[in-house]
Image (cartoon, rainbow, N blue to C red; front, side, top):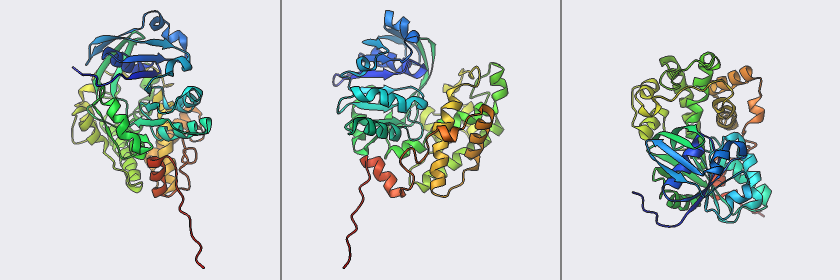
Amino acid sequence: MIVLRRELTYCVIGAGNGGLAMAGYLSMLGYKVNLYNRTVEKILPLMKDPTIYITGEENGFGVLNKVTGNMEEAIKDVDIIMVTIPAIGHRDIAKEMAPYLKDGQIIVLNPGRTGGALEVYETLLRERKKNNIIVAEAQTFIYATRSIKVTHSHIFKSKKEVSLAAIPATKTNHVLELLNEAYPQFISAKDILETSINNYGAIFHPAPTLLNSGHIERCIPFEYYTEGITPSIGNFLEKLDRERMELGRYLQVDTVSAMDWLYESYGAKGDSIYEAVQKNPAYQGLQAPQGLYIRYIYEDVPYSLVPMESMAQCIGLETPAISSIINIAQLMTNRDFREEGRTADRLGLEGLSITEMHMLARKGKIVKRRLEEVV
């Protein structure tokens, strides 16, 4: 049993699969938890009875403190704001929170995808004209979970480890000290560049979805990972992963391969991504989406793959596998994800040296050294 060392209050932003699991679990542990969702109609059952029932790896129920569609009510006086909405909404939710945030509050993106904490940090800086808010991002979402309905969440499996970093990075240990009461799985990353590059949703979401698009669009039921990732698709994912790791090496970021991550997170191992996926118990039973208008394309392409490609272009690195998935996604959806998504310019990274990128991540600002004139 977890012994709470101090009183912490949470707000969970988003009542999707992840948000319901997180809100239910935290309240089940005894934390005071508010749940916010922009679309009030979805959370009406919880507004009438604020109880979330958890099944699967965890079993029990949690009673929420407050369920609301009013942002000011949701985040007032809470210590930690856990954002679980898709990355496509990170900038807008930061603008919506900005007028009501108080100095010292902590925002955690679950997950940030690629560059999420940078985008939110920069947005709050513009909106508030100061930034005494700590913004952190998890490298991936801590649960494999699905909502049975808005009052019931099924947690298939929790990851054994999830790296996390704050901006500024000097606050990472402070954030972990608080979160580790409920989530000891969160561990420290060097900075948010590390969590952004070690974004495994970029590997496991867009490509398998696009390469299984015929079955998905016809709504043919199949297990997304164990049946959707075949040996040839697994081989392609390994090429995507090598490009991601090469980008990390250029950016002086500690990278972990997707195969090693599967082992560290779930204990699944094999001689290839395909084999490791087949041996991952957490992926058993996870069904493929019904239709293609899903975050695996509309979130993970513009907010995971596009920023990786853009950052690679800044340092002259080619990414043919990553670029091919972006191209296919754009051609199939008639969307310009490179225009919509996070680019190095939008994240404030374009034109920076690698040293300056890390300085921004670790200090929250870039300190230019004064060049003295030599007479």
